[in-house]
Length: 298
Ligand code: GRG
Image: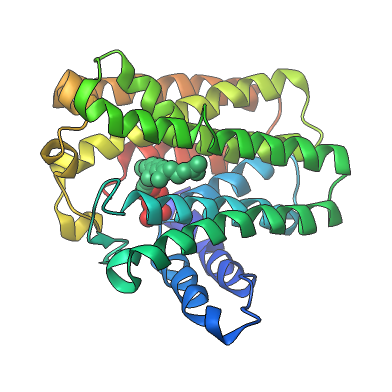
């Protein structure tokens, strides 16, 4: 299956759910904040995290709607991280998803609060909606996994290392930073749905390795695209990493070795997926996403 075909199958439903379930401000004073949250959520993201959740859940279940609260929460958290990442105190960017960044449109203080509020709401939605479809112990495990992926040893810590490494990073840090900053949340997209179903230990272990590889692959390719594609194609400023002196796979290994690393990481993920396929699971959606992560151009 081709990625566009797969994405088109779910895209409209994902976009609609993400907007429909956002909270409504009870005070007119908060309407601007609510608008700022909506602004970044409705902007044209690729929605790879929801699609990855759906693909993982499809290994175990035919009825895919029950996993919606999980992927929605992840996309809201991801959007929050992008809003904060773009702030002047972090990566300081003017464009995201082909539009002005949240702080350029609404100002720094509103952007900070829009991010914080999306983050809090994501966990509120998980606590309220997930138990309608899954047992409380499974919900707790899946929510805890996601919270960890956002935290000190996941996205938050990874982002801290990323900005610190601009000044004092060593080459060895780059893969670790990528796995924490970007990989941990992507791995949760694979593992959260597995936790919520009846996934056995052997498949869970393979999915864990697969999730780690696919998360790393996504950021390696992001580093490559930063130097090979234009701002128009990317919808954000190209060559940003190099200009900011970031520690990236390209700055450390060069473009050719970065591409080789991407291919090797892809092969590791492919191996794990084949093993899952050999156990009788239909891995077609996950394979489609894996191929796309290697071949994507933005
Ligand atoms: C969550 C505690 C906590 C803090 C936030 C700002 C921050 C800390 C983390 C930022 C992490 C970050 C921006 C990682 C980059 C990941 C990445 C490759 C983003 C781009 O993802 P795409 O290409 O974007 O999926 P779209 O716009 O398509 O959704």
